[in-house]
Structure formats: structure tokens, C-alpha cells
Image (tube, rainbow, N blue to C red; front, side, top):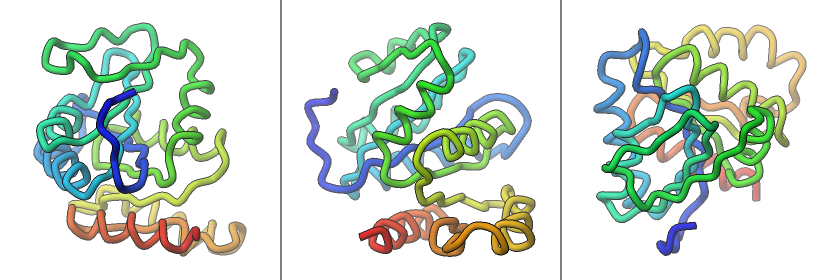
Length: 183
């Protein structure tokens, strides 16, 4: 674990820096890592199949934040991430359960389908957590439609536990708001 003692929530962040998706995602990861760390949040990230959200982790650490990585065996941290706590769990389900255990809220950043799939698998395997998605450039518009058409009829309180943000600042506000709703 990190020696940094965060004062805010522990947030599981799903982000990918590879594959097709938002061309601004590295910049968005940097903004989110910096803002969340400055607000005292502790970040938990997945690293699987050689994909590590490096911009998110480096920005959070540069801003004095605490970060932990849950990884599969394929992950070798680059020198820039030396000292970041890493827990290797060979089973994907175990990684998702651990992410759910550690996190008070799950956050999805625009990226690849792999990170969105990981978010939903984590949500399904672990005890359901509030989810906030950064809907930059309508990245999660399909999910928003699904939530309104399907989840609204079958998941009580979905509207309090599934939020969409348009900016990084709004993302933090929604994370804070859903955290207050849980209390």
C-alpha cells in the first residue's frame, strides 16, 4: 500500500490508453488523475493484457495522490511507475471482486471497449457500486440510452447509482454526490 493517506474516497477507475476510442483519452486521464489526487481520492486501476493507464497513474502520483494497481501476470510496470503498489491476481474475476471491495465508486473514462467491458464485469461480479461515466464526446451515450430504456424498469434507484458527467470537474462533483447518497 502507499504511504500516502488519502482523505477522500477510494475510486476504481476504468481507463485504457490503447485501441480505438477517444483521441483525447491520455489528456483526460491526466486531468482526472491530477484533479482526483488533489481532492484526496485514492485511485485503484486495472492493468490487464499489457494495458496500463499510465497517464492516469503518473498524473495522480505527480499531484501527491495514492494509487494502487490490480494486475494480471502480463503486466510489467514501466520505470515511470516504480513504487506504485501492484497486486497481481491471475483470475479476472478475483481482480474485479478486489476492485469492488476496495472502491466506493466506479468511474469509467472514455477509452476502448475493453475498459467499458471490465467496468460492467466488475459491477456484475462485485457488490454493486455507484458508477459515474465521463461522457465526453458522447462516449457513453449508448449506455445512457440503455439505462433509460432498460435499467430504469428493472434496477431500483439506478438513477442515483448511475451518473454521466460531461467534464472532468463535473465527474468529480458526481463522484462526490453519489458518495453522499450512499451514506
